[in-house]
Length: 115
Image 1 (cartoon, rainbow, N blue to C red):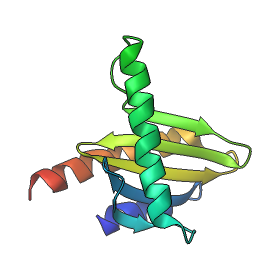
Image 2 (cartoon, helix red, strand yellow):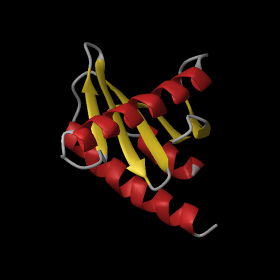
Image 3 (cartoon, one colour):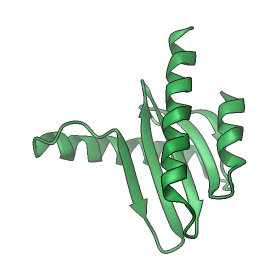
Image 4 (cartoon, rainbow, N blue to C red):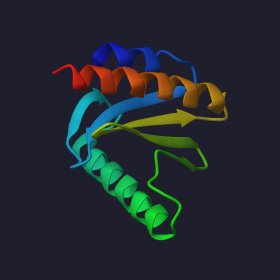
């Protein structure tokens, strides 16, 4: 898991990459913040709320969420029973970020399934 997340953070566009359970507990990764546990819990809650919203409006469960901010973007993508959260700074190649996240989520899902 660490290797997969490290490959993501090696990209110029990606600032942070963490993997959290849907319960909000951090599984792997590090943030450039002292409030890692709180951010993990808030990320899982936000993803869960967005999924509930998309389901309520009959659009199906969310798989990938992008929140654009003044400083960059926050990407959240489902990886089986986990959520991959990536933050970016500035306006990098967001298509590449999404593509690399999809690849990482496939690898993480396979890795977790092998346990």
